[in-house]
Amino acid sequence: MSTSTTQNSKRAFERAMRLAAISGLRASFGPALIEAAYNRQNRRNWALAAVGEMVVDKLPGMPSRASLPLMLPRAAAGGYVAQQVMEREGINDPWVAPMGAAVAAGVAALAPRIRGLMSTVLGIPSPLLGLAEDYLALKVGAEALGLSMDDLKRIGQDSIEDVQGLAEQAGVNVGPQIQQLKDKIQSAGAGSM
Image (cartoon, rainbow, N blue to C red; front, side, top):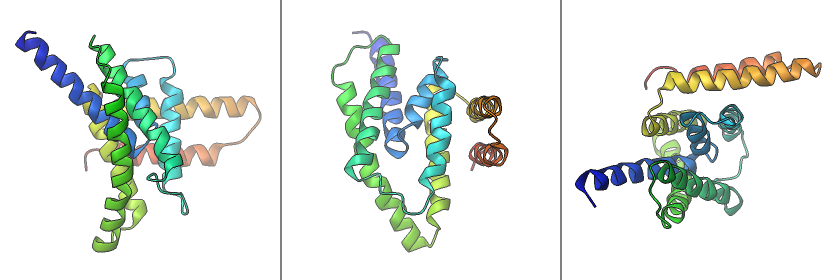
């Protein structure tokens, strides 16, 4: 194996594990970023799922992602995105999906503990930490796939507008809810922290 091939393989593996890690923070982020970066047909649906997950994560009483029912989708997403990145690079590694799943599960188990500790010790409100976590996950994932934060913002806004159009066709007024989602996207994509 040439040095160039080894370097490409290492870079692909690093991208794969970054996306697996952010899937441990938010289950839909890794797949949403893959769909967007590879310009796949489902990119808007995944973007909408990611926006929804950002909102739901901040609701009081949400169970910990470290609980088994919430850890499993994160592990599955981590394995999926890791495999997708490596396949895209033409690298067939049977261990990358299980390693991606393990990384996502590890992050899912550790992140709530870190978030709780920061909230307790530093007095930072948990929802604010959640927003910082969203931004970090989007930033790391976007960089891993060569997307800008503006790219992500545009995809999210397009997805929201699609939903609004479908709701209006069905005669449902979702204007206030759509505005809240647009505001959420605006705050998540607001420059660099």
